Image 1 (cartoon, rainbow, N blue to C red):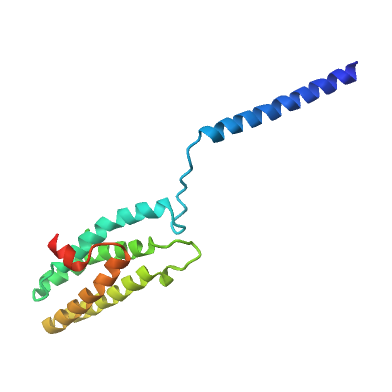
Image 2 (cartoon, rainbow, N blue to C red; image 1 turned 135 degrees about the horizontal axis):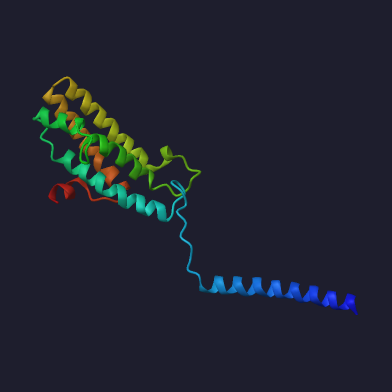
Length: 171
């Protein structure tokens, strides 16, 4: 009959569509490789590994420049702060914070609660004191501020999984 024939055609079409979807999806799932989502800027995962790699070079360049400063040469110290190039304070300041923030494992965790960010901020605070001493052109205060900043540096370097200041001086 006509009704039986149309039901048969309908069920045939439905079965065909179901079979196609199941066949395609199972073929796709079995042959696909795992997805590697970036996770966004703060959610952890693959993106943050690349962020760590990206900022490591800039941080290392800035730290090496900082560690090589002759604090008795106020012109050299001033040049470190005035340079916006890789190796200068401006670039180190940005890259250092971003590297510290790259150790965040959850987007719901504020950056300021991270140990690496706290250690960066402690180092940066000492650098600000160094800048103030430099503006007064007092070699003694510059030397003291530099020593204090250098003392805070190793805690930061350890938190961001970089070699210590002593190791960097030897590189």
